[in-house]
Image (tube, rainbow, N blue to C red):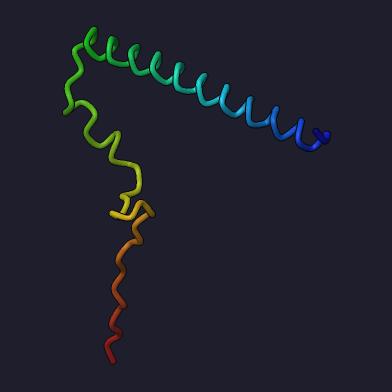
Amino acid sequence: MSRVDEINAQIAKLEAERASAISAERANVLAKMKADIKLYGFKTSDFKGVLATRAKRSPNGTRAAKKTTAKKTAK
């Protein structure tokens, strides 16, 4: 096995370990958020406008372009 193959194997192992760690941390954060929302009695209406700041996505997963109309010039 060449040195490059060894490094690639290490990278693959670390990427799998990273994905597992992110998944575990994500689950912990979500559980804490749910507990805090329940504890403080938040409602979905409390988040209106806060979460809507993200750009809308089109059905194919890319960011939707803003529709602009050409300005008419009066002469």
